[in-house]
Image (cartoon, rainbow, N blue to C red):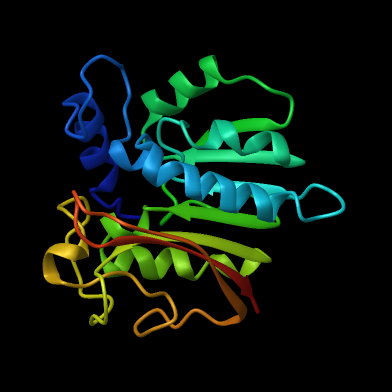
Length: 215
């Protein structure tokens, strides 16, 4: 029997106690999913990628959160599968966002099988997870053609992939950040392209979004 990671309980507590702010709404995924200076460059860059195909592609959004960003992306896809680990959050999103090409699923992406898609989105998800969980997820990414990865990383050079306990802050507090191409993850790719980068004055560091073509 698979032994569950504590991530589900941690994320449920974050939403229940509104630790990411905004007590006025039932579910809120934090400023990183709502601040216009952060999300507009991201939405513009990802939309440009999604609309560059002659025929729309399928997308799997792992860690969709409150869907404030996904709601601006899914219409540019053939099918958009939005995944999160918190059951109540997925139930909430399923009620408020209903479209023919949109599906919500509650999964633990480090344990469960991932939905089929051409492209996978991981936006500020891995930064919250331990190296063990990240490693399990990386092992499943070769089923996708494209990966759009966003991580909160230090400004300038840094030592990547210092381990953390899932849900207890991010690696920035250790002057580190996730780099899937570096050990211990060593993701194999054929191409990479920087889609957007925003320097965060209030939160320190930078949000870097990179497109990878997976080998």
